[in-house]
Image (cartoon, rainbow, N blue to C red; front, side, top):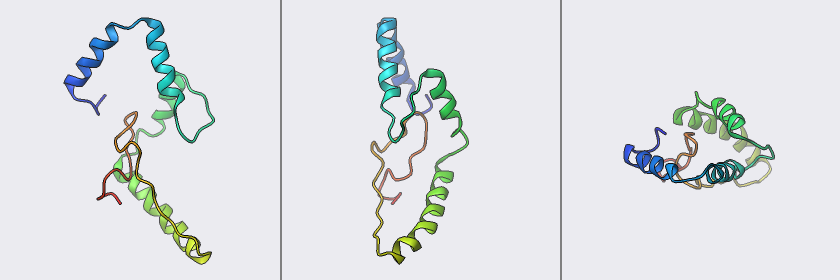
Amino acid sequence: EPSYSPVRLQEAEARLRTLSGEDIDRIERNLIAGLPATERTYNRETMRDALADYAAIGPAELRANLAWFLKEIIPVAEEVGARMCIHPDDPPFSLYGLPRVVSTADDA
């Protein structure tokens, strides 16, 4: 919720009040089902638990982790002649309240 303006939250709440329980369940399943890079299945509770694991990681910690990773991997890539690149975040904004690492040109 901190990622959204008060107006956007009010709009979402108004829309939510017009939906049936079945509609809400369907939306929830669709939002949770589309997580990349995982074979794990989530429901509302397990998704909240998974997100809680990352609660202490902000943009600075995420960038520091990326810097550490690159410091470790780039020399090895250079040794074997591999070229490294980074794909920008897609979408370039926070999802589920989690920070992103390469959302703007300044991030790269």
